[in-house]
Image (tube, rainbow, N blue to C red; front, side):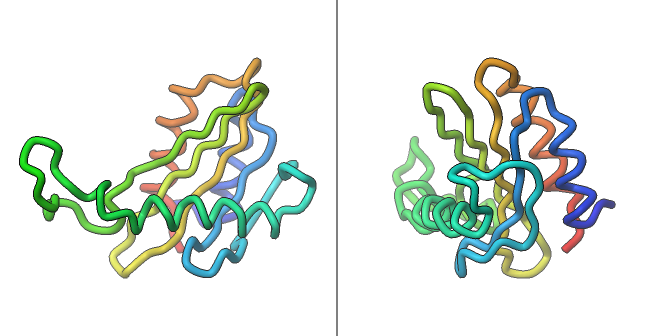
Length: 134
């Protein structure tokens, strides 16, 4: 089971990977980062993506079962599994990490849109999130 550094190294092996990080969405702190950062600053990237992750994780509408209009209580942790943000040149994947304790950690992968494979990256990032040891 990989720790943060090993997890980030594995994420960078994905085709088109430009940078990756692990951050806490409640505090906005970077727990680890590798490669490039959008804007050149890993700490700023962690804080900015943490805002997106926090909004999604705490949004009451994302925890509602669509057919019933009632909260989905079958899942633990944030109701959102991951976020995908597309720009003209890149993909940003934010994948929430579920743990036995109340986790507020997510993985962020920045992919070149021309070189990356979004479907493959999403599957591999989910696998890394499941194996990550904090």
